[in-house]
Image (cartoon, rainbow, N blue to C red; front, top):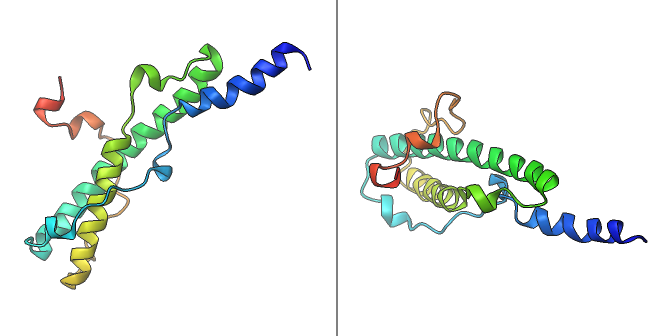
Length: 136
């Protein structure tokens, strides 16, 4: 085997390891159900819809980063996430929040007919959810 093939066989997996993780592979953080216990059913439904919307926006951005990382890795031989970062922490937190809110919705036997787990976020960006102190 020539040296270029050997290097390619070694480099491709190493470069792909540095790529942004797909949202579906990100594990949720453990969020205590007690964080949301004091909320009414209406507040829980509103809260989970907001979390679903935020999760969809961050997931869309993370998927874009993962795709561009693969392209950057192939073209430049350097994972793109080294330069742009990713949203793994935010997605893990949001997934944990959704689980905790869902547990409270079930415990309180809330009407969940107004819960929208897959909202349309085509007009939203991550920046729409960042707090003013995070935007710097």
